[in-house]
Image 1 (cartoon, one colour):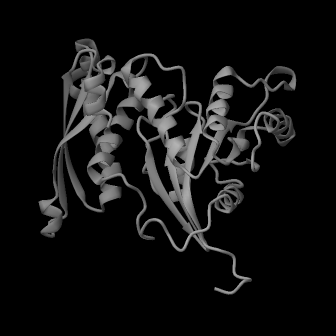
Image 2 (image 1 turned 45 degrees about the horizontal axis):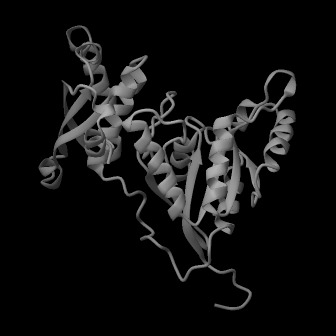
Image 3 (image 1 turned 90 degrees about the vertical axis):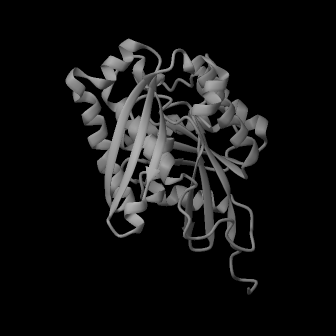
Length: 309
């Protein structure tokens, strides 16, 4: 390597922020694949999800993390622990906030966001600020937001962008890559996209459809386990994967809602999850869903550790 050749950069970056600021949407945008489920519900992401982005002279290993929030209950406590432990392990952090101002053009930095920034400062990791959803905010409102947050931490850079439309995402990637340490080569095989196994993605695709089609407390009371993942048909050239998944809820009333009248909602959930799985796996999928009551599983540490690894 000549002295004029920029060094190869490779490292890990945690995507952190309050729930529902667009971390998973950004990861999917960068990967070009639906590896992290996305719903309008806060706290959709429950575990950390690795996505690997390769470019000229760099490899970005991005960890999507659960939103950092005031945790109540075993499930929420584990989600926050996951986010904070990931922050402790990475080379850099990308803190995401939403663009936009309040009434009268005021920018109000909430206590939750201040807590996220405090955790990033405590980690001592280089940090960048990403102002997401810039497509929804008039340009004249971006500067007040940037000014309000710039003084809250020693950011390496502040980048407004839109994970939904892709606006300014290229610049965000360039800034992230520049924050990585020099390396002799990639940390992961260049053809590796994510650490999510197909079996886990199947469970997440089902949970995503439940969250999109139910309301109130039900999305947060649902866990999905894949009990069988038989790809013998795909290997033998038949082009079929058979999947059996169990949807766990906490009460009989929730079970009835998820199943729907004469099984209508469960059928809809299965159909939409199957279509996503067929696009992912590149073959036909037979998906069988069942629903089971597991009372107060979100409050039991053992159940949470087993169902949300």
